[in-house]
Length: 204
Image (cartoon, rainbow, N blue to C red; front, side, top):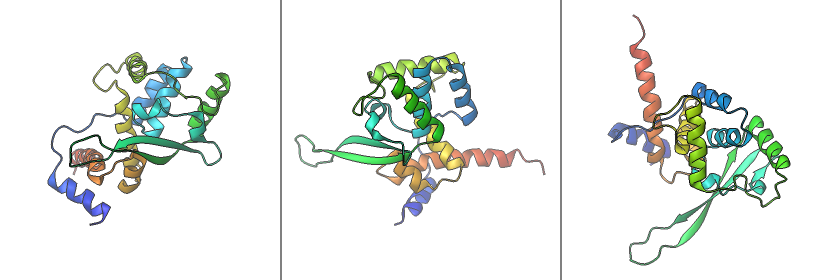
């Protein structure tokens, strides 16, 4: 079965549970504008928005993972392989390459020069809980004090934004690092539901 067909089947079966919450592009820009005077927080939000990485992945990114010539980010995730028998599961590395936009690349390089980061230096040298607090504070400053004030919301926002701009679901799956197309299909459901609502508002 093709990946596209698998996604279609996932939608046909319906998505159980609530759909992920996300910010649209205008809302993200409002957040970035609200924290324009805080360079570190601005970079954090900008980075999450335009890479779609998990919080646990973001705090592991090193300057050397940024390729300024090819304009890409290398993300390494440690995943535990499934085993039927009891006992510790083997850990394997999963790597993916994410294209990054010129403005984000410029901000990363400027930040690295200001902080005098070395090749193996962490881009965000703090814990995941600190990342959570910084993102929550940034969202609150822009007036978004609901449940979306969370790093993972920007991962959802990234996926929805790509799909709205006609990036194939299989490409979005690869960029997010989803092992199953069904995990990505939930974002198709969001885009589909919005399109349906738009059609309903059309005057005939």
